[in-house]
Each structure stands twice: as C-alpha cells, then as structure tokens.
Image 1 (cartoon, rainbow, N blue to C red):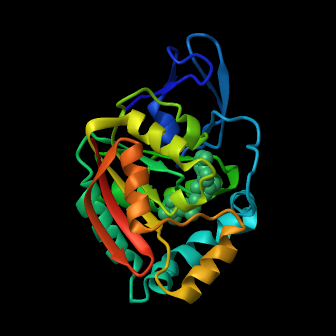
Image 2: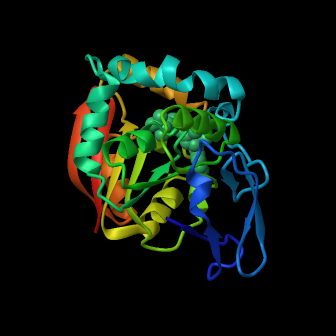
Length: 268
Ligand SMILES: C[S@@+](CC[C@H](N)C(=O)[O-])C[C@H]1O[C@@H](n2cnc3c(N)ncnc32)[C@H](O)[C@@H]1O
C-alpha cells in the first residue's frame, strides 16, 4: 500500500510514500516530497518529517533521544515494567492479548503506533493481522532506529515516521486505529496530541491507550511527585477520563491494575 502523508507546511499537499519504504529488509535511503516541492529525507527507511531536533521540555523527554536508552528500553524495562507497576504478574503476552482484543486490527486496516519507541505495539498488531498496515511514529531518531532493527528481526514491515505527535503529518480520518503505550505520561502538551489523535482517527476507529495513573498509596504519591519533577505526569482515573472527553473521545472499556490503566477509547 502506498502511504499518503500530509505536508507539514501546506496542509492540502500530499507526500506520496511508496510501499517499498515499509519493507525493512531492504534499506531505503533517499527522499520523499509533496507536489508543492517540500522534500523530506528518508534514512534507513525512516521518513524524517521533523528534520531538526525537537526542543525538549523535560528530562524524561530528552532521555528518549539517547542511543543507550533506545537500545535497552524494551528488553530491560518495558517487558518487565507492568508486573512492577501493577503489583501482579503481568507478562507482556497478557498486555498484547488485551491490545489485540480491543484494537481488533482488521484486514486492510491502517494503524498508528503513536509515540512508538521500539514499536512494541505496532509489531504486535502486525503479528496478529498480517494484512494490516502499520505506521510507527516517534520524534526520537534513536527510538525509530531501534524500532527498525526489531521490526526487521521480526520480519515485520511497517512505515517508520519521525514526527511530532502535536502535529501528526496525516490527513483527517486516516487511521482505523491508534495505539499508544506509556506515552501519555511523557507528553509535554498531552491535549494537543490527543486532539491530533482525534483528528486522524476514523469515526469508527479505536484508540487503545495504556498509561499510568496516580497511586492511591501515600508512598506511591510521594514517589510520583518526585518523578513529576523530571516531566512525567500522572492523573487519577477520573482526571484521565476528563482529558479523553475534552479531546473528543469516550471511554468504551477500561482495565486498571495497580497504577496501570488500559483504556479503549472511541470517538465521540
Ligand atoms: C514511554 S515511551 C513509549 C513506549 C512505547 N509506546 C511502548 O509501548 O513501549 C514514550 C515515547 O514517546 C515519544 N514521544 C514523547 N513525546 C512525543 C511527541 N510529542 N511526539 C512524538 N513522540 C513523542 C518518546 O520519544 C518515547 O519514545
């Protein structure tokens, strides 16, 4: 499938992306451009819409741009984190089961892994539905490089896009589903990103979000308050719901384990 991106400088202009850029076993280097002539580099299959380095507003955000964080993130932290944060045995397979049940990727559907890091969710969607197309988006080149390596090792084809979630370079109502694991807590302007998710999702699409909520325990709150200094935000379950509603989504299903909250959102 050829992918159509929206030019960040002219919202009526289309950037046509040939399908072979998603074939990660064949390195693609070159550029893509819109009919208005604005051009974007493609390095190792990663389509760089951003070009420049983003301005970091927190320590949490800047660490995602270190090569070391990117290379150890998934195996050392991500796959074990939910057992630690939920207070129960929560293997990655259980998270994937819920992801696939709620996101229900369909044949020919187009899915966005928003703030993908190593594209754990994107790869899981593709493994469950080989005939779905995946776009993995992050503003960290290092994370996208790691996503590329992992996807190639899994023989998973996907489009890798370097862009800011606050300005998603796609036209309205493009995606059949959006998945976002752990990213909400790290966003500097979460509402802007949620508004963008609402704009690019189809009316019958599903938005799967995993995020961390405020702890009920005083010691948990104390820890979260100190973590907040580094730029990580936490909301209660009700505050999270308000945030989702404000962006034009409603909660269709939710599962809370410890401070881990999984939400199935649908457009209002
Ligand atoms: C906690 S990690 C996400 C983990 C991943 N989704 C998973 O389930 O393993 C957060 C990611 O969001 C990215 N990110 C944060 N703010 C962003 C923004 N405004 N636009 C794009 N990516 C962003 C970071 O670079 C980082 O890779």
